[in-house]
Length: 354
Image (tube, rainbow, N blue to C red; front, side):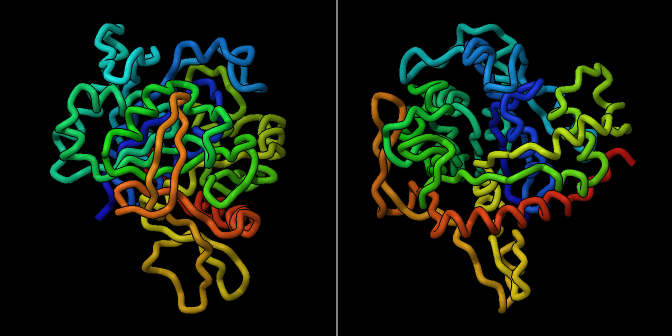
């Protein structure tokens, strides 16, 4: 059976972090995942940060309604989506009920999906923890009953560097890490920055995006539209036409930073392997061949302690209710992922536009 999942993502249109557009394909493409909803985690103040956002991806922007609608069309799905409060929490117990009605729908959707699900649901957070924290404050008993596990892609491996997702809403991060809910941590950064490597952070980097050329045409056009920052208003028709060659060549030549793949592997029960012929693939655990070498991508028990900054520290050991990501050799891991992740994306065969 596919694993029931809600993806909570700080996906914007136009993109702020192009990794979010790439990452959400996993939610639709992995057959092991039953995507119940997409919750858009936007922050109004973010538009004013760093001259409008991440350098190279200036604002203004809005929650990623366009890319979610495109992926629903590509995969023939009708996954519900909504955005959440744009305002930071003002206290650990803030329910943010005083924000505009349009910003309430994401929290309402999250709570409704949990209430209607006959089994516990995995909640994947790729932004601030605000949607999770607000939902928990409004109905803690529901989350305690229906959350299989929270997968929190945020934080640092030591509580020093002010990691981006934590900075967006420190109180929300504290609320979730201290909530007592089943929690898997995927630190994005080390003590230095979010582009360094250690055994517990998830960062790795692709040297280019040329592999997009080998993806299914609809997915290639989806990424061409997003990463090319197209202003076409007919964003569904754009999936039927190739982006200009000069746009795609520029995209193909870009380096690409990745933090999220470890989460999708864990949730879908997939592992990273080196085949006997030296190639690397991401495969279901049940399909590991006798000659395969598994490259570690795991969660191990830990205890986590929050800090006033919103960051957390951890110690290995515990009962497994809280766990943290671990890999053995970051260089070996990156080398394997550079081959395996593009191969996985190229294997997706959507049928929604046929």
